[in-house]
Length: 60
Image (spheres, rainbow, N blue to C red):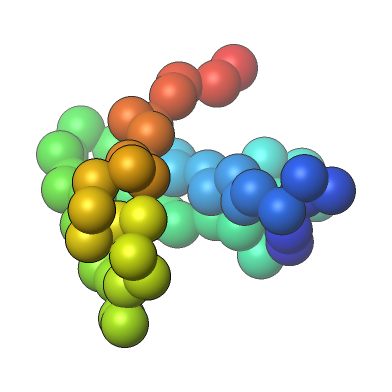
């Protein structure tokens, strides 16, 4: 689900937070995982490096 400001929250963990099942990626407890961000047809701000993907932020 998209936030009001146009951003998205994606949750990673063994279980989905209540009400966030559509924005959740299941992980396996005790095992690592990698995040990969892929752009299809990136726009000029990505190419001229005026836009940058923010680092993931942990939430409780």
